[in-house]
Image 1: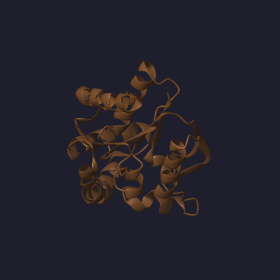
Image 2: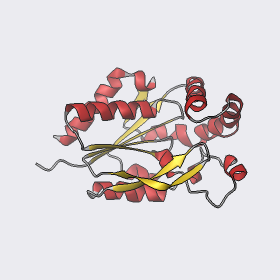
Image 3: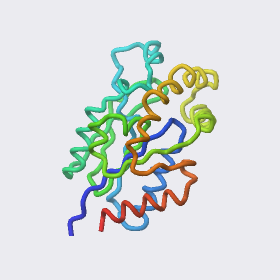
Image 4: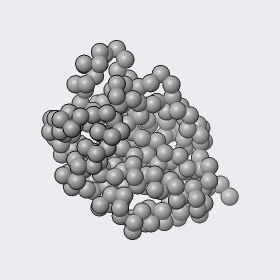
Length: 210
């Protein structure tokens, strides 16, 4: 029996726990049923190439604005995945605020998990999603998580994280991210710690694959 391709999108504020939920869903789906048929891609991989800009200019980019993403490429990749094709996904280096020349090969499969702050913002991206999820976590908790993540994994100073949060992350959240909650099929409070929500998402995916 040919099972339908399922594309699940997970949106929410930076630090809400989107990646944690995506990885948890991935591991459980692979373990229980869909070995070699589940893939994850991150919206951050589709930040626009800024090779023509100096590093000092790239620092000033508003990375929480929709224009920072090459969503048109993301839409093509979602279409290609649904058509049974493999993807060459860009790779992004946070330390230099730019893409690498190399891409990451994502094999075709039955289930694709897409996570990112604005995956429910762009109508063309949203249209490609079979299950739309919004992770709803208070901004103060998101900020604490962001500080822990970015100091450890992205070589950022606490001062630079707080400045970016105040100048772009917070205002862009209220302007572009939080309003996309209305497009969600499922709203997940507490992020990756919400076991009941994760089980519910798994049930939705399994139901589509029967």
